[in-house]
Length: 268
Image 1 (cartoon, rainbow, N blue to C red):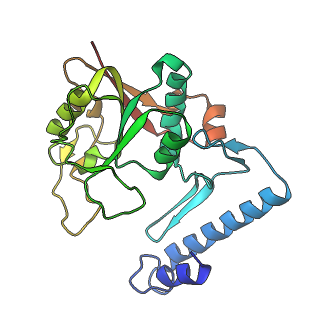
Image 2 (cartoon, one colour):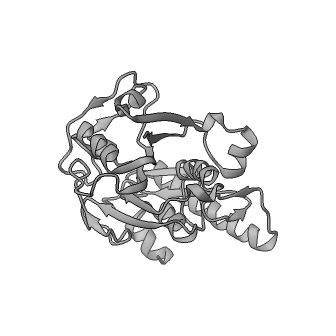
Image 3 (cartoon, rainbow, N blue to C red):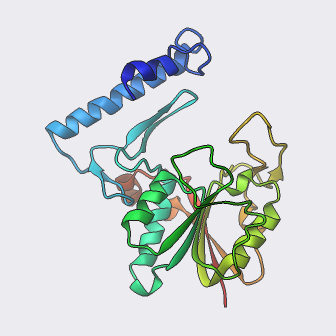
């Protein structure tokens, strides 16, 4: 998007959360973030560096870029090549460990609301057929193969070797039915890679009212009991925390130590 058009939609838009005269602090953070990203790109052109690297797309550079949006600015978080965030780079490190064994490469995958970064991985990693699903078609970037309600998925039992479920379950009011469906459609020995919006300070997860005005509304706040809530007979759940990684690995791949995912294996 041209710089002027972007500015009109953000810092010069009176309805934006980064409007320059209404929200000057956020507008300043956006301007600084965009400037830092531009300078990083120039510096890597003049003097190539490989201080950090993306495990999703293999990009190498001086530093991951600042994610800039009207409501949030996150320094050193996003890959300039594939758009992956640190939570996605974390789970991909785990996937690559599994994929090092050719016998464990999945033949059929289900991608639930698949992000651009995960779409990149699926397209370039030589994985099997990936069925992309979403709950509507509002965002054309993701081009789903099917529109489904994950609580009533409709796929046959034992259909998929892998399920990619990142930041989906917190939007589903009928959480238990959704997890039951994941268990049902995953084949024995298959893996579900699960990530959710997680609040470490929260001892017990709780259901919250959906805001009908919010397109990205959450139905759940998940906390320390999330792995227990995922538990099902014949369904082995492991919490994988980024803090388990060596500091040098986290630094190289730009992964914050608070990130985590849950790896669920269907036994049998």
